[in-house]
Length: 196
Image (cartoon, rainbow, N blue to C red; front, side, top):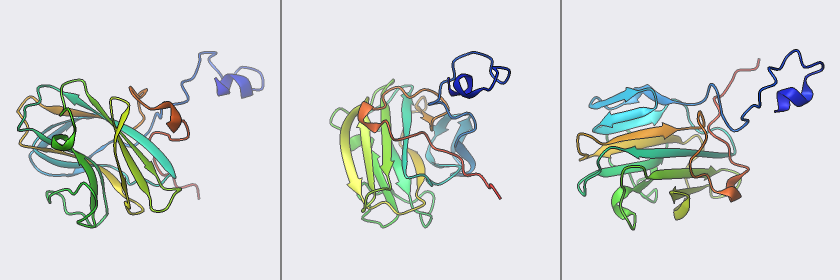
């Protein structure tokens, strides 16, 4: 849409509407910063272990979603959140930052648990101090924590999950399913660029 509005003669635009909320070359799941028993296929992670996004959160306000795919059992332990650079992959994740290196929500602490199709939304606001991380289940706020460190990195963890369980990460490369309207100033994760 903006490309159509600001094109001098229309020659630089296809005339097609542009979805400004979609980040073409955004952050993805890391194929290197993960534990061994996980497989990553594009934006889907399967197996048992932990995986980081391929970049830390550098922008002031960011939002991302993690969707649940496949069968979730009562023994499945899924954790989603952020970790400090000091976090050692494979170590337990804290819900409130008590360990000084992780701020997450655990599936077992959700009032309804998780089922296929559920989406956990994460909003990190670094414009406020202490930094605030909010978690949403299908668009409804379920938890807020304060104190994540600067340059925290999104993490997904699957522990004790049934073989068919998978998580689908959306860091902004697709339209968000449940982004709350009051988070309009929050964007998907932007990849840092060297402009010099």
